[in-house]
Amino acid sequence: MPLLSRLTSKLVAWLATVLIFLTSAAQSENTGSVVLKVSIPENTPPNPTLSLGGDFNGWNPTVPGFTLSPSNDGRYTFTFPSYPIGKVLNF
Image (cartoon, rainbow, N blue to C red):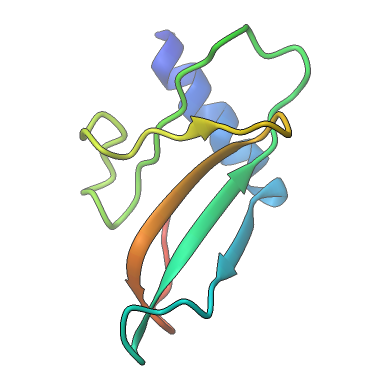
């Protein structure tokens, strides 16, 4: 199984650790930013590339612009800068 597929499969398994926050710094009254924070197992190979696939990009994690960034606390993050409040994210 290719590395991207394995990491994508593992990411789905880790969704229980995903924290989603709607911030109050909304661009309008009907949108806000959504921040995904993902914890990964300690035995994950160094410097993994983690990408999102969902209804927002045709379920294709290879679409540019949906790569999670490592943060100082060891988690990986991705921010949707403007997302309709109340709309469900499917990924």
